[in-house]
Amino acid sequence: MHYNQSCAANGNHHGNRNRHLLIRSMQRAAVNIYKTENSYEMLVFAPGRIKEHFHLDVKGNQLTVSYNPPDGFPRPEWILREYSRGGFVRTFELDDSIDATAITAKYADGVLQVSLPVVKGKEAEKRDIVIQ
Image 1: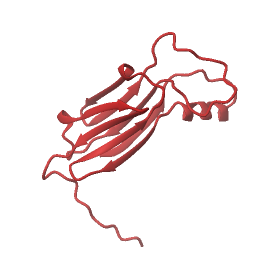
Image 2: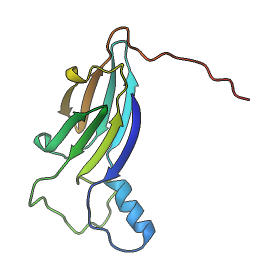
Image 3: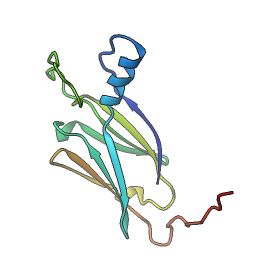
């Protein structure tokens, strides 16, 4: 499994380029991925979201994880804002070792956990690269 791309959802972008980049980074949900014996486990850190507004799909070899907040979602005038509950899209490239038909997900305690089972015998080969 390989990370491919990410982008922030549309948001309210005011001000200069640095502010624009700050807003974009706040709207991107952080992701951690670890490997177990039988799967890759993806943890999407997305507190304050509503489970029914997440969307996961696989098209070809791309897994897309997205979130669209409901219409009328409150947007207060923030005094301090260190994370966003807004929408996001994250895309990941799946290799042949992932069984895309058996991917599962659950949302609990602000974390979307996506389980990507590995097909037995299809694990990617590990090879050492010599640094010159």
